[in-house]
Amino acid sequence: MTNYLSALDTVFDSLADPTRRAVVRRLGRGPASVSELASDFPMALPSFLRHIRALEGSGLIRTRKSGRVRTCTLEHDRLAVIEGWLAEQRAIWESRTDRLETFIHDAKDDQ
Amino acid sequence: MSSDLDPDLDLELARIIRAPRSAVWRAWTDAGALQQWFIPAPATLRVERLEVRPGGGLVTSFSEDGAKFEAHMDAVFLVVEPDSRLVWTNAIDSRWRPQNPQPVALTAEISFLEHDEGTDYRVVVRHGRPEDRKRHAELGFFEGWGTVTQQLAALVE
Image 1 (cartoon, rainbow over the protein chains, first blue to last red):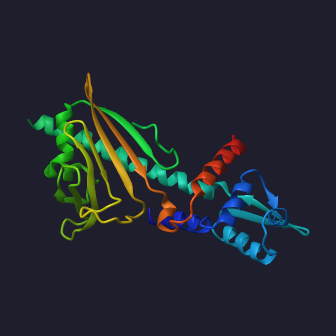
Image 2 (image 1 turned 180 degrees about the horizontal axis):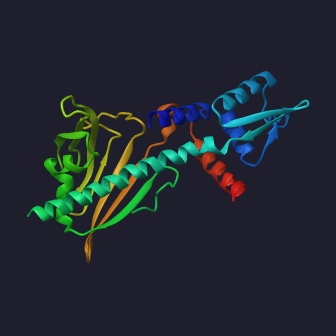
Image 3 (image 1 turned 45 degrees about the vertical axis):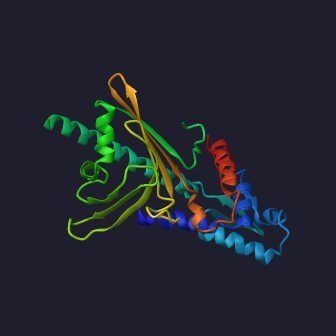
């Protein structure tokens, strides 16, 4: 649970920036090169590269250099931590309901 | 009831419980009953306040060893309709002070509906946005998030 929440924190920290969210959205459509991505944003390349490194550091994207081109790809597994968190909340409530049901039936048997 | 649910944040479950609605209601609203099922054993729950009325407190503590108790939940009832519906939230505490519980604030809506075999028991939990505790001013992220997941689904299917 603790690891889970820290993974969630890392992902949300990384996505707490509009440029990085835009990059993730763009990569949701498919891999793109850094220069392709950078052309969408009105900022100097070094600033943009810092965002790319932050995303890479959080595990949300992966980059690979081939020749002079660095290609960025979205890491689906990392994005899935959000859905995983909700699934975990659901499991908590499902088992809580199991216990409620057992408790009521046991109480009835005692009567 | 659930038309406003956000699939990214909210959860819903339903169960037919073979007992009268009043019995299920009592399991939620009697402190001695609630502490027997609300959290999984071997941890023990202690109900500190259970004021079953709108604005009343729902305060619990828990213990791993049965000796040392720690704060568990400090919530407040929003809606109380006997034998029929309970709504509580931990977005404000039992003194009505806004708070930011970890990991996120939630509102739980528990419905006890009449059913041939007993009680049609339903739970809807609405969660706050996990990033709210980081950046209140950052809006629109989840919109983008929804788009990303749709695109992802399209990619992987």
